[in-house]
Image 1: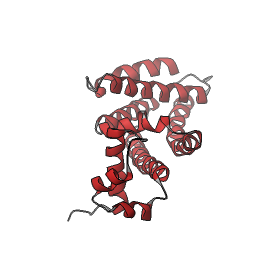
Image 2: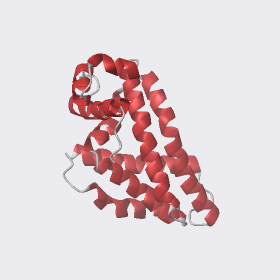
Image 3: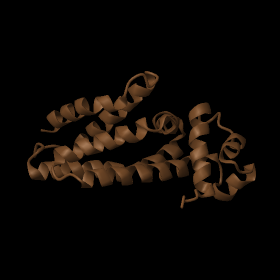
Image 4: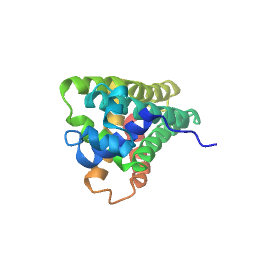
Length: 192
């Protein structure tokens, strides 16, 4: 039996598609409602306004993103293998959903200061996941003992994030997954 998708999930999925196509500021609630197959007013039953919808979208998508990444990392014992699983899951999830990549890499970053603070709060569990991998590697002797794990986390996240942004800027002209081994090799060298 196929699980039915809730209206709020349909609205969030529609918002990803419409925002990716028209940009956050160009995305109209009417277009999101039409894409979701609901009346305009239905959106306001679930979300206070378009800003609330964007934050809710990021919370929902990031929650799934983190959950998947944690599951992949949990399969590995060595920190270097966990790092590879983290990189792979990050690239895999965004390369599988171009619209989500556009929304997370471009649209969320063009928001106002208040929204950026809310988005940063949603991102914290993912950053803590990176911290866990780094700290595990330091404790196990796979990574340098004198690392500043906060700086190392910024390096890991920033590297993966920039690779995804560059892939998008190219117009998705190459397979993002082809960058995984190079990213992993460089990050391991930087952390060792």
